[in-house]
Length: 141
Figure 1 (cartoon, rainbow, N blue to C red):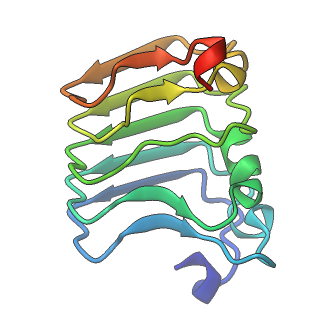
Figure 2: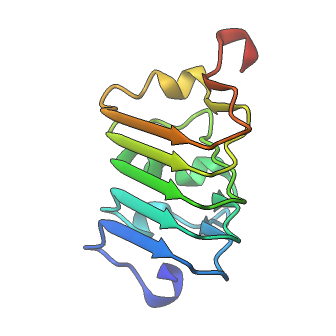
């Protein structure tokens, strides 16, 4: 959407609900720059997105700037979404993470990502049945 419309310089929050055609939030090609697309993006709320499978598709290094800026991430009733944070990602500004009825995989955060969660104030996880560990033990990364 943003790639077609052009930069949305003042967009800082995105809320999507019941959008059945959306499969990922960012589809990044190798030459795309996330900073050019959404430079002030700090909040993402997703709800009832049944076909959503992930936050991004493409090289994880291209979306690292998005994760650095993110302050609030709320994902509810996205039953096919796999929550994955790239090992290199820095969640230094994340204050709130809410996951409700999502496919998170066995581990939510690799140790390297968990170390960047210095501002995290609220973590809510409900009915993520595949989740076994919130933070991976050093040997399990």
